[in-house]
Length: 264
Image (tube, rainbow, N blue to C red):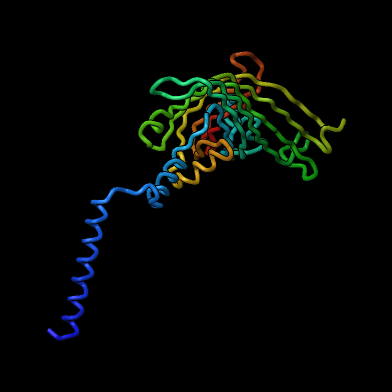
């Protein structure tokens, strides 16, 4: 072995022995109250554990929407004939008040939701299947609901698994307006409007995002009151068919919704 290698080996052994001795000495000595590492770890744990009281939830909701206007017709009904069989864009918001907790299950309370969707196309020329380039016909629907909401978040609270299943059931309402003709709602156009009542049912699951950065999530909670931020997916059945009364325009839909949710 060359002299250089011998010196290098001796230096490594000496360094290792010094490191081992320092570790043993550190293990034998008690932690000083001024240990900045211990103090910093304690501060971080306190920040990550902060949780403000939670009683409200807010959702932003997006998805496709295809009104069931034609469900009473065999073959192509008036909606498909006018607007085609494509799906329209749906946007909605929802606010839930969750003042009660079921032990080992989750939070429960009322939820109020509002949504918006609209379809438009060139109007037909009277007595013809041809479209009038200068005129449009449209159908606008605002589906709403008042529901009982159950968020089964105890699993997340007790185990840290960031999945929260939920269910909603209640009363639905669809406020709709139709228009056809130039300059509607001017007198030379045709306009119709109404309200269709029904039921509302939804099942979904939320993915809590706090685990991505628990420290930042805790700081957000402390400064804004937002406990958790979620991405969610939901099957929504807005069964707006008049609850058996006739005549009623069926403006509900069975669809999937994606969105962003917040607990506060």
